[in-house]
Amino acid sequence: MVRGKTQIRRIENATSRQVTFSKRRNGLLKKAFELSVLCDAEVAVIIFSPNGKLYEFASSSMKDTIKRYRDHVKEIQTQNSPCQEDVQHLRQLAEGMAKQIELLEVAKRKLLGQGLGSTTIEELLPIEEQLEKSVCVIRAKKMQVYNKQIQQLQTKERMLTTENAVLNEKCQIQNTKESEERIENFMVMENKDTSDVETDLFIGLPKRKIKYN
Image 1 (cartoon, one colour):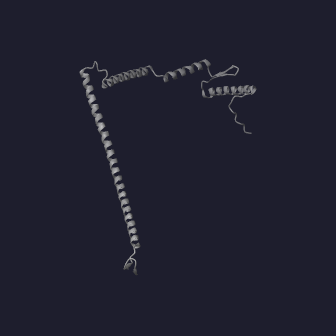
Image 2: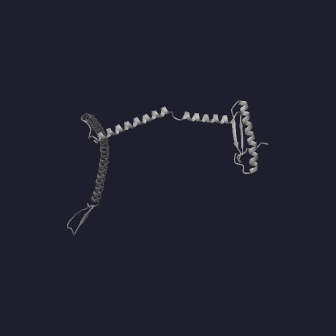
Image 3: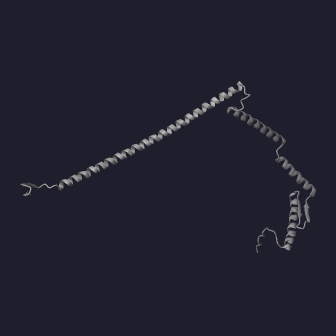
């Protein structure tokens, strides 16, 4: 008969829970002993029961194993933490970037015409040259934008001219067709009126008509 899989969750029955604890505890301590013997490993197991009772196993000395564990954790934390040299280097980089930002802010204010009270002629000349270069670049960009807009408007104008020509041609064709229809209708009406006029010839006085067919 196949044994069912045990569901891992807290056992509600206190008696069953205590029995399971005793069995699993003994099995865990036995496996720890076998691991230490078979693999020559340093093993330490600490178990506290629900009532606070201590159970432990150590392949050598429990205190030495705990001390070795703490030293190992401390060494890992030291390796993962940044060294003093790295911290100092990062601090120097941050200070250098802060100074560069400050210089850029000063240069920005001078380009905007601010903070020029104590500026000398030698300091003003490069600023003036930079402003002239900036103005030239801005004007060139402005002309480029203007030319692009003009090209777009010219293209749009050609499209509208073409559409207008097509519409005019359609209007002329429509007007010609309507004129031909009016002439045709007029001719039809003329022919109808002509056919209704009497063409008989009468001789004599109006009161005495002699009709000749």
